[in-house]
Amino acid sequence: MGVLDAVNNVAARMYNLYHSKGVNVTLKDPKLDKILEDAVGAIDQPTGEKKIAEAARYIRDNYLAIPIASIPVNIATNPKIQGWRFGKMGSSFGVKLNVGTK
Image (cartoon, rainbow, N blue to C red):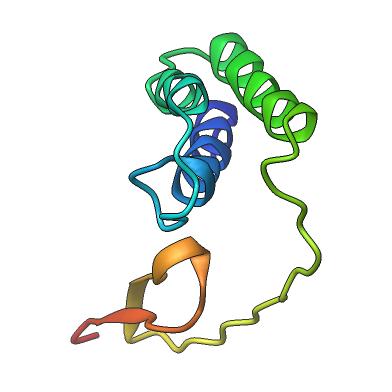
């Protein structure tokens, strides 16, 4: 995974958690939505990192969310599994596997 891919991954996770169209439907903040849209749409690493940091500060400064837990997930596969998609919020619940014919 390249650096820009990693930045985009973080931006996408933040979008899903905090954007009004993400999975957290109780949070509706147009200013935060704009920051997250800019982060997801960033085409270079410095811009993406700046927008992610701006979103994190905005969330912290406005007490929009207070994370209290993190659930680690381990996934074991075999050579027939060619990829998978996580459910909402990166959860392992609802994982969809792509099984190949190797």
